[in-house]
Length: 178
Image (cartoon, rainbow, N blue to C red; front, side, top):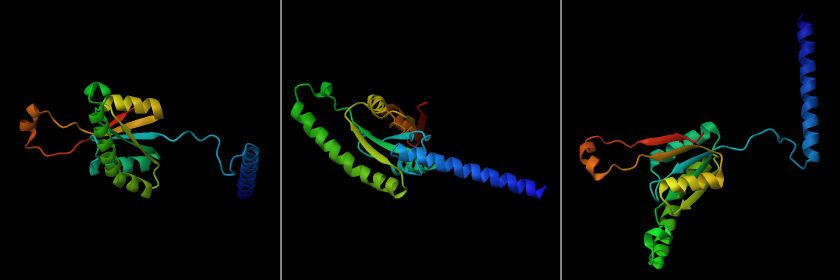
């Protein structure tokens, strides 16, 4: 009985080696690396929305942990409502504000980028000059395959701020895009 299992194991191992060899030959004829798997799907993306030009440490830590566990790429989004409709005739003011916002965003995202890259996570930084919801739709259209969105809770309005002042907490929100 043991010999039967040993022979079956050898046949299975031989068949696996033959299949691997056949796959390597097919990959070589298509110009792909030997260990390339043609059946792998594209990598999922995790959209992380900052509070205008900044990302809190809680959001960064949560996003890096989630991206690592799920093998996702991180898209870090900074957005500010600086569309041309807001400024009308003051195009030079808008241009200057956009440049300043971009500089602040690029400076604040460096810690996030370094932490992601230190953990082997692909990282892309995107800056949009729209409302957060519009920016998210634009990024979804541009990059596709976004599976989850992570953001901080929006700051409460001044009417709610007084009643919530005794409750210090920092929320991280996660949305599924499926």
